[in-house]
Length: 216
Image: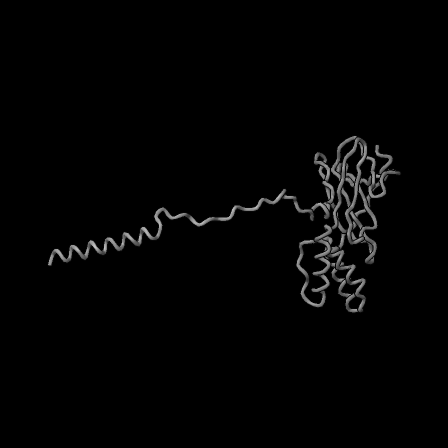
């Protein structure tokens, strides 16, 4: 029925976060700062909100996290067209070597064949007529055996995944419009001037002295 599809071989994936952190530690022990920083950048792109590990990698990991938080972490975004799936990857650390898109058909994983042409930064896959859950996997071969970086499952009736965040747009400040100078606060005007108060106090004092004199 699906002659243009072929079965996917499944394997137990390793933890990519632990692998990248271990590779960074090995590179740091060898004095290879370039590879250390690259591994930490990949580690940060998988978990942008993580805390830097304590120890020798703390400062370099903090720099990697700051860079990824300004660019966005590893992510995948899709759009469904009439007969195809259009897929893109946001990969600021350059980890991804292979992208697999497949559907789940009656408990089996069946990989979609990629279509030729299309945009350079997009991958188009032909979809079957029936709706099936989509499985998208991002793989890397830069750290020994193939490493599954991320697996995303989209339900059959779910909408497409939104596009990646635009760091430039996120950094823009909304223009509040022309600044209006605030009206300076003014001290409240007293209802009775101070000399009227002083005169009243003096008159009251004289009246009291007169009354006291009369009583004598």
